[in-house]
Image (cartoon, rainbow over all chains, first blue to last red; front, side):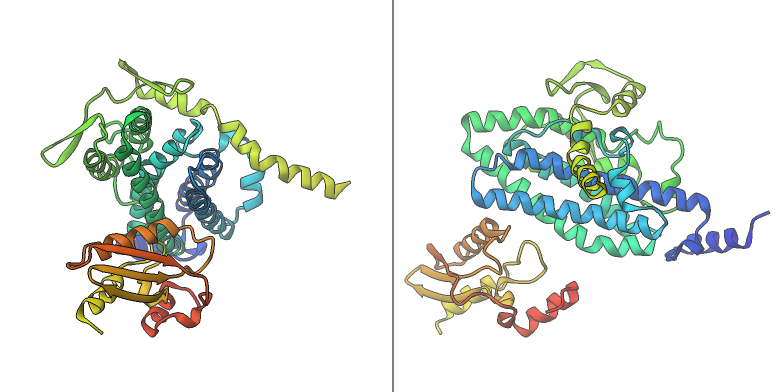
Length: 310
Length: 104
């Protein structure tokens, strides 16, 4: 028999009302909400060291300032997610500093090093666009009030990142020559990696608790289509080729999805289609920079704690 | 004030700060605007010297003014004196920032 709490929760959810406090949640909802927030916080947090490597290669002082401001935004966005997790009973310090690198939950793409300003521009235009779609959907649909409201400013700041990415991609493409070739080479590996970001296709994903609890509103394929509908026309408008095209109302990929990715060489082998099990295994094993990036912020924390203790 | 000068001010009132929903004019960044035969000279400042949107704002100002019929050249001078402060916000700008959740 359903408990009184369960009945109240079901009523709130089916009416489309917002849930405001842990006392209104069921344990299953709380668990799913925490998981979704952790993915969001981890993704924003890890984008900071991922972007920083490339931001150091900024072509001007102004560009460097913009890069650093974007990183500052991402850290603030991470803090919003971890702060809400604290209100739900978790501890922000433990989450950031005491977890094993492999237990961080963020898209595999960030594990592949971004080593140039060109790669950062593409990341701002593609990875941040993915973040924009995912968070925009949560902002629109989320049943948890405090998170929904916290995302208002996040969305506006993501716009700034998109603008930086798109305007630099445009400039680099316009420059032509080797600059444009480098842009194209990097889009070639970064585009499919972002397509993968949205996860399993809907026909393989039987059931989504996140949708059921209105923690998000769109399915993986709907979010992927949204992303494609922005990124494909943009790339085409600046003369950059991407392996996807429009057919009727939807975008279709021009390569087997999923395919095999060689992270060391930043290379996709489209002649070697693989299964989603292979992809999930690659994701679980994490990529080249995972341990190093987590160590980046964890090491100083432990050093400080040790020096305080002695 | 000639109508072209008025149109240039109105054009800049359409240019938004890339980080906040407020126009450059309401933010009080535009110090001076003069038009001489197709050339518009603008003096503007930023809220901070390390403004992350520095290039974007300059690009937007140039692009918007060049889109104005009768304007062929744009000369932008960045000035730091007097330094920007929230005193320079217009009442509309103040309201926009308060709506946005910034105490000013």
